[in-house]
Image (tube, rainbow, N blue to C red; front, side):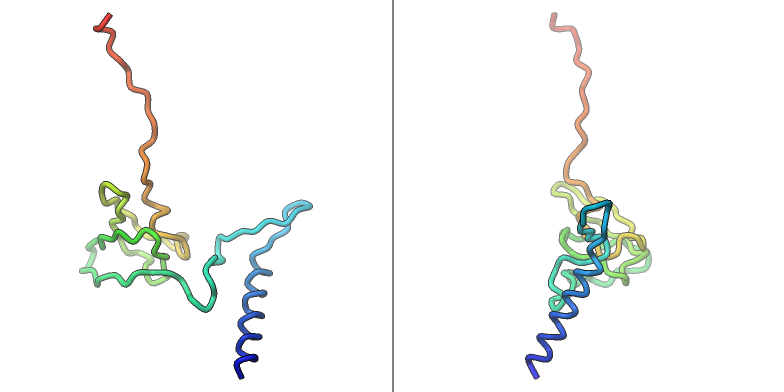
Length: 118
C-alpha cells in the first residue's frame, strides 16, 4: 500500500518536472512561473490571515507567504522592513510570493549638491 502511494507521488513529481521544462533553441531551461518549487506533498506555504472587513487591507509581515487564488482582488499591506506598502492582488500574481511586490530597497538617486562651501 505504501509503495503504491510512493510510486504515485514519484510519478506526480516527474510529471510536474516534465511540464516545467521547456526547450529554448538548443538548450533546455527551467521556468518556475506556474510550477511551485516546494514539494508537492507539502503544498504552498502561506500564513493564515485574519478575516478582513469589506474593502479593508490586511496588514502582514509574512513576505514569504504564497498568494492563493482565493486572494485575488484583496488588498494587502506588506511590510518591507520599514513600512507597510499596499499590494492589490491580481490573477497574474497567483503562486508567487507577497514579498515580490513590496520592494525593500529604495532606488539610488544622485543628489544635487550646493556649491556654497567653495
